[in-house]
Length: 286
Image (cartoon, rainbow, N blue to C red; front, side, top):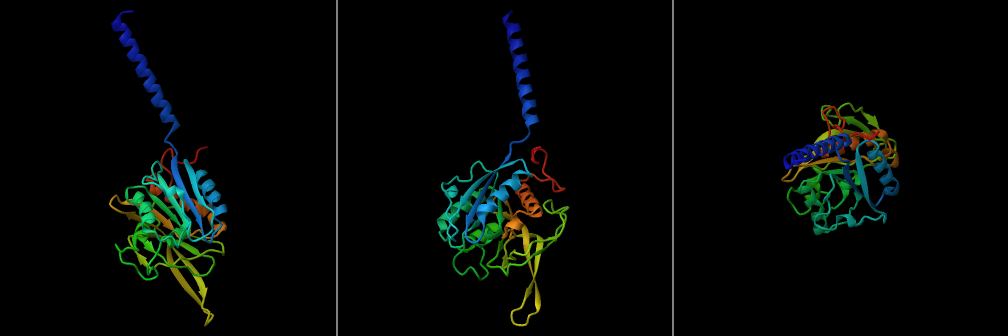
């Protein structure tokens, strides 16, 4: 074989190999979304909920959920996952489901927030809204103030909740990819409706309503608050999805709740179609 024929044969073989590899990679589809679930702390059955969320997300999406769990059941859970400057590197989204009301170290919190300012999306569930707060946090905060930074990422300031009752959920924006096609529903009885103190960029998607009996008059008062929303955070307009729902195990294990959370993950990672379905390759593996 002449050198010219050899070179030609070599390049044909190499081209065939590269083409076959590209086809095989295309058939495999996109890599799974890498999800970091940070969960633990006070006041909830996180030992159960971490598994409900992992199974619920992975059964609905082409995703791998890594769990960073703190089982101390205090208001000061500290997570090794947050150590290091590049703690979120390699993850497509971080799900915050911690209850850390008394973690007040600005350096620790700033390190968490910096990852989201740099572009790592976040999904915030339930007690994440009542975490990392200090100062006079029960009053409406001022944007840019020392105790506003966590609320600014979330997009809404909440400081407390009402009694443990059912929450009636009504979607207020049916055209958003997260909510399109979803039906209004009512949670089981042991759920909490978080208050809305101040909006900081949040775009509401659903309202929650409770009938709360006045202790003095015995009259049922209607209490309404936004319970599902999105936010664009920081210089990179990082996508942030939040819901205050998720107190009780029955809520967290409810298919309707898990559908909502997984759509929030898809929206945050920009992998959702206009009809609310995962983009090609990001649906559940069959």
